[in-house]
Length: 279
Image (cartoon, rainbow, N blue to C red; front, side, top):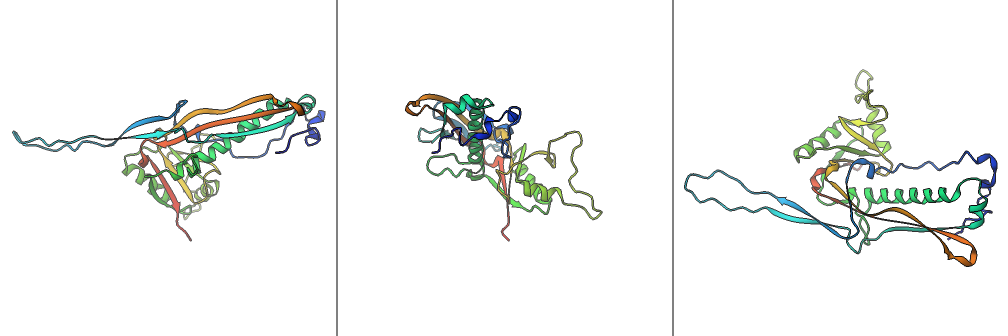
């Protein structure tokens, strides 16, 4: 692991950049901002769930009333074996003292931002392998459909699937490429099929459902979700710890960031995943 020194960060010594700091272009952290239920806990939790309801029917007067039971199960979240997101970065004390900007605050922010980005990737596309987060696209039992980015009716079909499952979709998730393809669809007169809502500046929506456009969703996939049925268990938000003793003999400072989350669906059919047909 390379240590950041004054030799590797020479531009931070220049007075002309005191008011200018260029960050890389990157995807915005979006999952936690899209409205899932967030449960703060410092240990494993079990959420009870009604898997099936009672069978109620008409019974004649004096006839034997049939018995029926509610089917119950539970969702396990944040098991003790679930791994955390963690990283350590090191920087020399000289860099922190001589930088023209508040580099310690910058590095803390950068570490938090990068950890949040890794968390977003896991919440969307994590496979759950080796005791990690199983993301939204890999949750079992979800509804499925076909995505055709050249035909807006495929989105309506997705809404129809969700409605047939009694879901109330509150959020689309699409890749930039698929969203652009859908928005470019025109009718025979050259008019765009999907018209933006001029009263909702900066907010995309598709057939009345708010849309989040993010590169964290792979092209060829679209998610339609009732986010009130998506649960995120949060043990620890991205948290930075500063330690000047770890590298005492080299006069370096260690910056450590940790985060621990888990994801589950209260009702899997509340999520519909559309996938493009293979060419």
